[in-house]
Every structure is written in C-alpha cells, then in structure tokens.
Image (tube, rainbow over all chains, first blue to last red; front, top):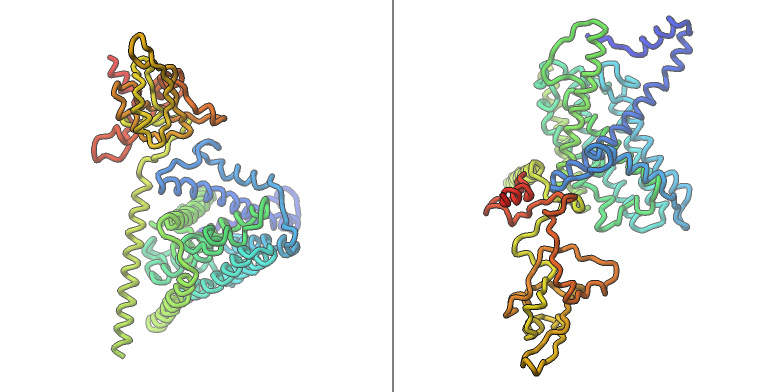
Length: 358
Length: 185
C-alpha cells in the first residue's frame, strides 16, 4: 500500500539533474546513517528532559526551568558541560582499556538502530536477521563495561563492571526467548515483517494481546538490560559510588551517559516493534495513494512509532520513582528463576498453539 | 507430588501479590504527578512563614526591666544583659542587650517567659552572613523590624501550608499580596 521509497526518489532526482545513478547511490549511503545518529542523539536530549521533568513531577518539584523555555535546553547544557570538562585518566589505569571501554559500549547500541523501522521503507537496512542482529550487537556492550571496569583500576569500578556483565548476560536470555516467540508468530526475524504481521485489526492485532506473558517478561528484561531502576545495580551509588563510571569524567563519561539513554530509547523502539504494532496507528485507516499523502503517511508512521516508544519511556521513568533497587541476589534470582522459566514456557506455549492452529 | 503442587500454588499467589503491590506503588507515583509542586523559586518567590513561625528575635529596649528571666530560661544562657543599678530611682537600668544568633536555637523560651513582652519572634529567616560575628545582634540590631516578603515588589510571596484551611494540602492560586490588598480596603 505504501510505496514511499526515499532511495529511489533520490536516484531519480540525480538522473534528472544529470548525475549517474552510481554516484547518487554512493552519496545516498551515508545520509540515512547520519540522519539516524542525529535523530537518536536528539531523542536522548528529549528523554533526558522528560526524565528530569517527570521525576520532578513525581516528587512534586518543578524541575529544570531556566535553560530555554520550560528548561528544554537543560540536556544540551549538561552535554556542553561534559564536553568542556577536563578528561582525566587515572595514573594507574590501563589506558587502552580505559579509553576503549566507553566506545565499545556506545557503538553497538547505535548499531541497533540499523534495523529499526520507522515506516515501511523508513529504515537503514532491512536485514533478514533483523532482531537477531540487535540481540547480537547488544551483547557486545557488556564487554565494554567489563573493559572500563577493569581498566579503571578501582575496586568500585571493577565490581560495577562485573555486576553489569552478570546482569546483561542473565537478562539477555529471557529477552532472546521473548523475541523468539515473536519470531515464531511472524515466521521471520525481519523487523518489517514482524510489524506488518501486526497490521490487521488495528490495536487488536498487536502482539501484546497474543503475547501478554512475553510482553511483561520483555519489559522487565529490557529495563534490566538498560540498567534502569529498579535494576541499576552496576551503578548503585549507595554501594559502588557510580560503578564502572566512577573514574570517568568529561566526554568519556558523556559517552556512557548518552549510551545509557540511547539504549533506553532503542529498547522502547523494540517494544514498539515487537509488541505494539510498530508504525501502525491504533485504528487502521487507508490513505489515498498519491505522492503527497504518502509523504504524510511516512510522517504519520514516524509519529506513531515515537509516540509508542515514548509511552514506554514514560513507564520506565515512572518505574524509577516507584520501585526500590533490588539486591544483586534478588536480581539474579528474578532473572534466572522467574523470567527464564516464564519466557521459556511462553515460547513453548506459542510453539504449541502455532502447531495446533496453523 | 502434592507438596510440589502446593509450592507452585504459593509461588503463584506470591507473584500475583507482588504484582498487586507494584500496581499500588504505580498508582501512588502517578497520583503525585498531578499535584502542584511544593518547591518555590526561592530568590524570586518567597514563603510567607506561619504566624507562629519562630524566626529572628525582636527586642524592645524601652520595655526591658533587666530581670534576666530570658537568661535563666534559655537552654544555654545566651542573652547578654548588661545593666546598672541606679540608686536614685531604685531600679536597674539596661545598658545593652545582645543575642548571638549563631548560637541561638530559636526555641522561643525567652519570648515565652519575658514578663514585659519586650521579646518577640519575627518572620525573618534570612539571617545568613559572611562572618559569624555579624550574627551577634546588639539591642539596636534586635530592635529593627524585618520587612515582610509580601511588601517586597521584586518578590512573589507564596503562602505556606499553615495558611490553608484545615485538611487541605494543596496551595491555592490566590496570592497573599492580593488578599492583603483586599484587607487594606
């Protein structure tokens, strides 16, 4: 129904202006990537602002007020401060690991945006192993956390890094099992197909209704993957100062900061794609198939995706001020003894129903 | 076998209970979001303290009879009363009186027991200084009346909870200044 193809449009534009399709294609390649990186960073600014404002609301405070209207520029001010801070490497730290750590954490998180669809054709690459690609890249991040924790040569940082790795590994499994159940329903790991499969019947066609158990397990595991409260043990400030971030200042700390929020945003996007029908509106409607309407439909798709994503983020921020932090043993037993059997049972149930009815 | 089933049942019950408690917690957090903030923009907005607020102590030199009751009821004997016995009028005459607010705990005992009511509490709470010796107020400094935040045109006065009707916990939009203007008319 929707044939909005920006790449084709770009190449046709080049042909009309007298450039060869090959040249136009070479110029085209970096454009969506840069767009997505900028969009993700802007998304982080919005989340930071939302987080501060919603936190303020939950605690009956006012929140940022003076940096820009309603304090909208506050995250920008925070970021600028981090850029201009002195970059200190501790004297006895492992310099290579210490410097490499933040980059290893941030880059895979940005890679996950490669396969996130904002509309039928609004994505960087429609990989056949889409969701698996996300799971695979997001498992690289704990190595970076371990590197920075070990490289800091600080016991708090080391403990934080170990905790982060343990947490990421244990919650990856229920996460992957939930994704697997979805992949069974869609018969594909392709993100676009997973979303298209939820297109019929508006809000009732979404995977939330077919996978309620998986949805809850996925939400919990996603929160733990993002190291958000109540699972922010790796940086539990009361016990570990700031965990693996203890020795970092300036832009390296900024990378961790951006990384954690980009990860939160991408988790929200995945909740949207896997369970909340992606770019589809809650009430289905057909747009006339003329170019103008298709552009409007593209913006609508982005709007719905972001709306669902940010409602998940709202829930995550609300959780932060509702639930107290769990202990490390509680965290691991929740992951291994509750979420893992739950997700496994959900997968078996899905497979059974799939075999029986299809 | 039966034990196993029973433990599963217990586990299920505990899980649903935990989910219920988490739901209750979310309701509380969500409810707080719609409430008015309790913080105020301090230098631009100022809180009007409650009527019985125990702020900086005001002293009236002419009323004092130098009986030193304030010194005796003070937990740390803080007020310094310097007097001289005048034989001609057979009375003690006060020479100077001072209270060090760097040490005072604002308990209000002196105000409570003063037989001539020459001591009183004011609503002034901004008494920070750069040098702690400046906090030692003599009778001239103690005799100055504080200016109310409501009278300062640069400041937006905000009423504290004490001005609200009993049982109400949300600040009203009505301003102290508007109300006091109505009172004047």
